[in-house]
Image (cartoon, rainbow over all chains, first blue to last red; front, side, top):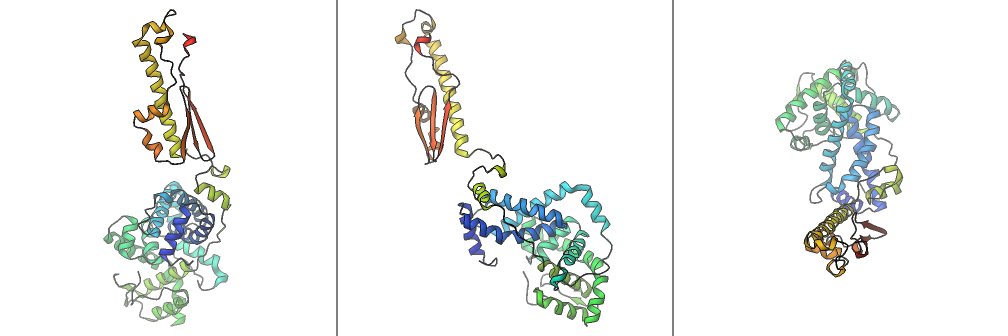
Length: 192
Length: 187
């Protein structure tokens, strides 16, 4: 099954709810990468994302009965994960905010995401760039620009207005330009 | 979602898109999406890089013990999952048993009030209500059989003045009243 087929995913979830072992295994393998990536984007911390993604999967498994089968599964899952990330972020508290402030300086260089050998460096640079955003900016940027949701969808998922999404997105992009711009300039200049 | 004038979102096209974007004058407006305000090329490049890095993320998925996951989903209590809250039907059964206990206690107390001679040593035994109480009948009288009836797996296999026994699948639950009806010989 591909992750791009919402109907098939919804059918899979129905089997998971019934306790079908094969469906649970397939669901875990299908969903964990998405959940992990969301956690990584929201928390901007690879270690915390690894930990929370596992917890989130178990939480989703427990809470599947709360999902209204007449609606699409994905938005429900995303909302659950976003709320878990917010809870975790609040628990991280001052330490996380201190790290956030410390990471506002522009990155000296960024690796090429298309090079698999540099995966660890890419992840480190991405989390550092995301950490330069506030949690709200990060939520909007992840859901809107990285996950590819529309402004309306992102607003619905985050339960905020569309104008707020646009404002936060503009701030987020501007901040990323400051953090990534200097490192990307040589890459772009050389390629043009 | 993306639109026709989007900068490509895919991995392979990303660097090409990035180079093309960077080839533009740095301050020239460049739309990222149809409903966005125009972004300058430097911003577009930053967003492109973030998208490419995002799409390159692939966390290793280690599936936990599938038996634990299945047990967790089915509401069992695997050791690794810790103690779970009791199933709804168990909670209802316990609540029903508590009501039955109160009913027994109340009826016993009322019996003493109605037939004070029954508490005396010389009271004729025939005046003491010592008939076993049908718990199911009492549940029905209280209209609390409805929740039990909605659980077809739960069967009341035995009910008397001292206990009620419920069975659901492999689970057998015996609830004992806290104040069992005294036998007439105790009086």
